[in-house]
Length: 418
Ligand SMILES: [Zn+2]
Image (tube, rainbow, N blue to C red):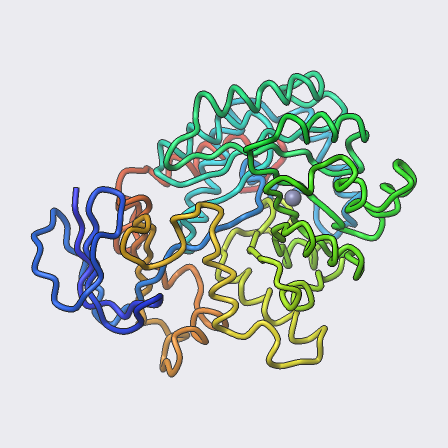
């Protein structure tokens, strides 16, 4: 299978109008006037051609709970609304159908890969394989019984079996300890020992009250708990990082951790704003995440990127903070090493963005347009791992109406109006 993208304005190592030739799942050639014959030709004239974005923190099956409970603090939202609904409604079928909906929503805004933490993650992997999206799946590990694991040991062995069954070019498996306030130090140590060679994905410093809970439980701050358990030595991705002190940031720097900025969920749950500009100035790698659809409440990564930049300017009283090009780089930072760049030899994870919208008229700087003006309606074509998933705004081999119908039918039982 080969694809030729013609005459698009490419953003990447080589910037300007180029053709891109894709063979199998790789970018084979980027040049002007490529003559190779291709099975599929995409005319990208008057369009931007960009690497797909990476949504590095989500709980995709939570689309069932979108708008179920809003205008609440994190702990009230979790303890009184989300956890009870999860106990009742989360099962294999729910995870499969509802995460599919989220994947389509993510692809619609040019997201090619996502990192997920939830339950029945094998269903997330199956849905991702069916749709053709790249995913890092992680079974959420907590100290109490989950919908599919009786305890921490079971969740650890499940993570190993997920790796055996699904790890491939497009699926990675992560260890996903939920947080320091839902796990004992012993459990965190067990996870640290088990997770050598894995990505680790966790929530940290999401709110001030989370830090207080952690201090009560462990007599230490969350970052110290992670360090003492040995988890900071792993390839760890820390989602949120809102209530981070300078000492926490120093630890992130010392251990070369990755930070995932999740601004809209933090704003909506009134958790605060992560000191991302400061974190970046310390040389720490930052990724973007939407969080689950129940706390955001959409998965439009372009919207997320816009907010991620604007709030940093505002809290730092610095209009240069997280500028347009930096925002684009954060969005394309990928958990998959060979994704996120338009570069020969890289995976063919590419989006075509059409420039015929009101918000795309005129364009002086494509990064400014993407960071501050674009939205998912502007995304026309998405190629993931060399396969066209969305073409001219239509999903090629997925019945999106059926996916929406299935989720709506399920949500009716929870009292959804529409
Ligand atoms: Zn989360």
